Image 1: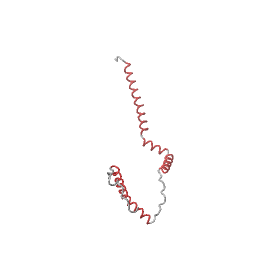
Image 2: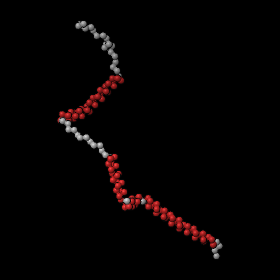
Image 3: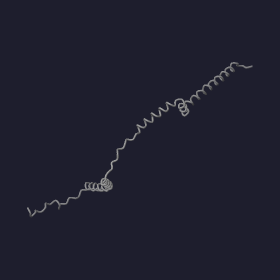
Image 4: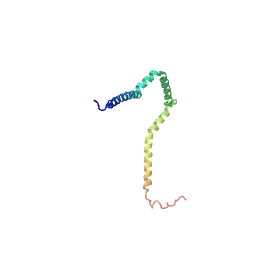
Length: 132
């Protein structure tokens, strides 16, 4: 009937191999999903080792406290009324002083860039004084 009886046996063997490979791949996929499911792994670790998690959280809290700690501020000194008024006056005068200094610097630089012409009248000697 069948011309090639060994082909049926080979097909059955290939079907069994494919089923075994599918089973092996299914197991590997399940293991990979478990390994990549981080929230489930954390939940199971919390259930299995709560004391370890508590100690680690306390240690990290203490470490963060020392690392992110602010420097203590010194006690504020209370200044007298004249000192406060002087400070306010200097603070208010600072912008005006800056503007005045900027204008003076601008005038000085302008004089350096464009020197005044020399006048021959200014260079003659002054007349003798009577009180010599």
